[in-house]
Image 1 (cartoon, chains in turn cyan, brown):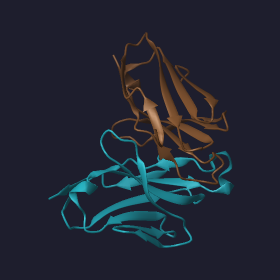
Image 2 (cartoon, rainbow over the protein chains, first blue to last red):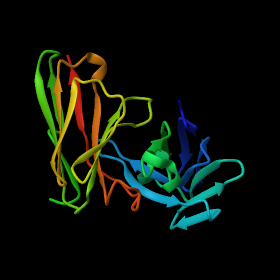
Image 3 (tube, helix red, strand yellow):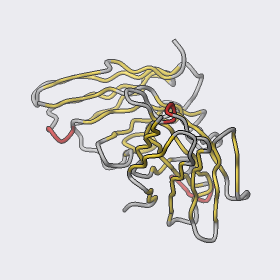
Image 4 (cartoon, one colour):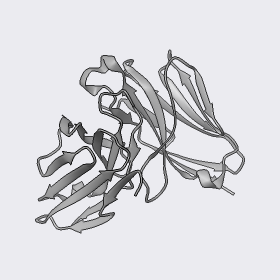
Length: 117
Length: 115
């Protein structure tokens, strides 16, 4: 059962543009929503994360927008650069009410981002 | 060495072979994870160890056998694998597996090809 749905599968953006990747989840027990960035030949690296008590979190050019009622969250990359070209994964994790699933990440399918110079 | 390291980085094995993947974390964490990453599929959690005890086996076939001798080392023993087991196997660690620290740190992975 796919609990976190990510779109689009691939995205092409021009340098300086805004990249937007969306994720939707089903389980209301999720309370931690990270985004990971993966370059070829490397493991995923934590980029930015949000909890449902805030609607937006910004770190540099990267912003997470969170809509709790819609059960959706998105990653915005402002002023996209060729060096941002990578695969991006959203994920979700349950809090203490999640029982044995507490802290375990469920990943989306990934988005391959290409930023053209 | 820093972070999470994995060896070997690439492995080609026949279906009758026995091999092992190794993961080591240098972060002082207490929880370690094995994930399988296949093309066009989400990362699949395979096993979780928390303070050397296995706390999760995500319905993984018995041809995959994990071992965690201490909180810094994690192994994945492989035997009689199938071609569909070819994938990138990722190791990760976190402060602990109870969720008090959600941040997981990944190694670079082992690219496994089963022939």
